[in-house]
Image 1 (cartoon, rainbow, N blue to C red):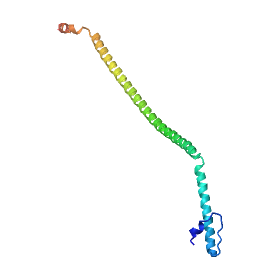
Image 2: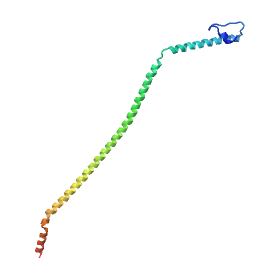
Image 3: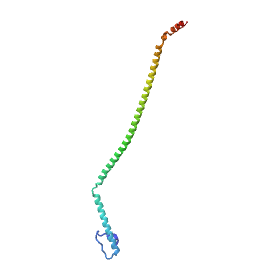
Image 4: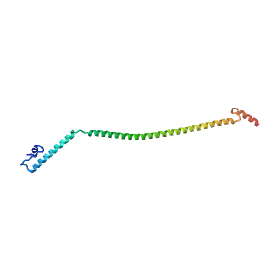
Length: 151
C-alpha cells in the first residue's frame, strides 16, 4: 500500500495496521502532522485575507504626509535660492543707480565749470571793453589824434 493511500484516511485519525512496520507507522504520523499543519496554515492565511485592511489607509495617509514634506522642502529650497538671486539683483541695481548718480554729479560739475569759465570769459571781455579809453569803433580816430599830439 502506498503512502498516499494511507493518507486517504481522516486527518487526526491514527492509522494502525499490523502489517506495517514501525518506520511506515512513523511516516504515516509525520504525513498526518504535515497535513494538519498545512491545513492550519491555509485556514490562517484565508482568515488573514478576509480580515479588513487598515494598512492601505495608513500608507495613503503616510504617503500624503511624505509628499507634503517633500513639497514644503522643495518650496523652501526654491524660496531660498530665489531670495538669494533677488538679493543679488537688488544689489546690482543699487550699484547701477549709484554709478548713474555719480556720473550725473560729475556731468553737473563739468557743466558748472564750463558755465563759470564762460562767465569769466564774458567778464574779462566786459572788463577789457570798460577799461579802454575809447570804444573800439572810435579807435582809428583816437590813433590819428595820438599821432597829431606826438608831432
